[in-house]
Image (cartoon, rainbow over all chains, first blue to last red; front, side, top):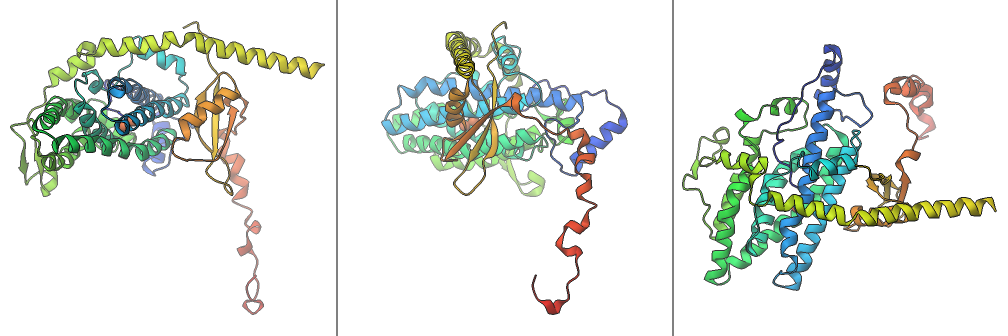
Length: 333
Length: 95
Ligand SMILES: [Fe+2]
Ligand SMILES: [Fe+2]
């Protein structure tokens, strides 16, 4: 996966009060909304945008890891990484299928990604510089994705919820294989452990940004929560992730690159949790808006894949046409 | 985009013999042969099934959810369709 707090969602609707109330009643009763059901335009638009961003993130997310498949250090690691990247492609396709039930076409979504109009998770605009990054991505990026996706399994829109259940089942292997890579490096030579620390240093903050802007700056979050598209706010999910991940870093013997990180008894309604330092939101917006290290590369790679595949799509359609024609001819004879 | 759109297929998978095929999602493919290949790759990477059906999405006719009340309402008021509607003395035993 990799959905992130939705960027620039627009949940405005213009329907009558009675219609919106009736819809909200269904949501409050935990009824699932299915594609052909009447729904507010804002609900439809928000979902098309969110599921589309999520699908694009899965697809673009194949690139930073695909980068290391040929250089994996052993056959076991190569097979695992290949299977993981293939899963991400599958996640993208489940999600495109879910979005298509809302009346948007695959071609339209592809075009929006390639033209730069559609967003995807900012995390994939960071480069993967050494093998340890494969460990850190599985552990942190898939870990953050899982935090985001588990509540989405209860999303009010049926096809999205069902796709998420399938995705969540597959994600746990992703996170575990990543953590195992980190563990192996941390138990290796001092140099290998340093590689793991370096990967954590570079990916920690971008992983926290995956949950999206602070609640106070996340304008459309409230409507999404009311419609039960989202179940937890960006900050709530981020906190859960930090609380789960800091002890895992300690187990590895690695240092989380945040000098302000400390246990705070007052967090999580008195249950305690980790308080963290300030997130560099300027960097987040810079990357979201297209100025990350890898933004141009990622879209270039997707464009190339799409263009290089054009003759295959064309040939397959022509072949199907020919077969259909032959069938009608045979039937006529 | 002037390119021709690749048709959409709905995918149904039977998890194992003895169970019915169940809808799992959809794929795009030029024809049924490629649709089956794509469905296998996308929906059965971990032993999810032993049989796949694909059906052109535009070949499915569906009831209208806006008329769900009229369509399914009569089933609720025909209580004589249920076994509990009939009174049989306990002495008769289980029936
Ligand atoms: Fe994924
Ligand atoms: Fe994943």
